[in-house]
Length: 329
Image (cartoon, rainbow, N blue to C red; front, side, top):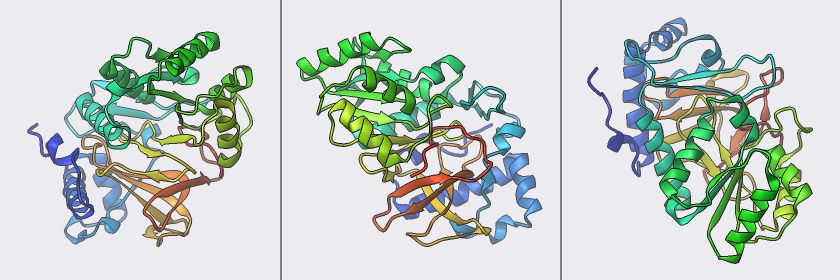
């Protein structure tokens, strides 16, 4: 199949209008070339000829990734990512036709928010993701470590003593350092090894994974900032079904890269959208998802702030408890 979209079209400093134009083009492509999505649009009575605004594009429920193989018709997958989850939980599968799109997306996204990976010693504290395997988050962090090339970058499964040693070495040598971790493991670490490393960037990916009680973001970030001796805790908003990530540098206020957009849907009218400041379901447009589906209705609840940032406030009742965004706050 000839490529309908080029990476340099998408992974660039798109204006909001350019993103909307590309989203409409991608909608028509996926309507035609992704049968399950076309069928879903037909079920809703949507005629692509009448879709002229982003808000008119149908968003598939994220649960489709647990029940359907979502990949452009006629293409094969080169990677399959699986969501994290507790025992017995149905896990989402994301079939990735072109891994290079994912690498470009998370690399340019990281550069957009933090600069080049080669500035950092990158440390990963992601035990549950490593143990379950096929994690898009582990793949991303591993690739960023390889791009950065720092000799002490690496993953730490349960070896907190070694992680502490590396952190102290980086601090003593004024090495720019980023620690990316799942919430429960970061808490476990600082309970055993509290430190004061004010220049450390701590990025929590959310989720207690059934290992500890859930807590509001403010409480989690307060414990972590005190335990690491930092002023702010950063957060990453990503999930198996997406190939792009949003980041927050403080207070859980997330920003997206230029090729990703968040809309807030009305819980009582899934085809309707809410103005800034009102809470509803989070819908995501991820233009990196060219060969799966770029229009996803998540099970997260959030709101968009006046400054354009968004916050994650919780999850729908009775939804699967999984992914990178389990906190209520």
